[in-house]
Image (cartoon, rainbow, N blue to C red; front, side):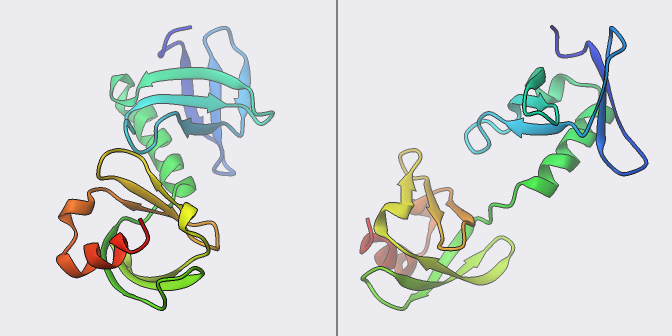
Length: 156
């Protein structure tokens, strides 16, 4: 199956509809990125309501603009991963601790339940999952200000 042997539309209820070249129609399609952080434009699976893959998209940028926009809009609704730009304060250097952080989506507080909720993804990239299940990304620890790095180092 190629990346382009289907048509993607949105129905009146706002759900994605995939129409295959052979005429099969699938409503309630859900796009899922294979590598949401390291390669967000590569590898998107279009899943049916039953969770089975209907189509694989190697690169979003290879799709016609209309379909790419539909998929990106759906992904934006499903994905919520604020990027931490500054760690302002932590309540304690023992877990659980409350962190006051600045993100690309505004200031917020996160609850770090355990140190193993900080995962290294790449050399300087971290993923922090708070006590409420929200994932926060630190794209480059070296780009944080000195105060933020000092606080973060106490947990690494």
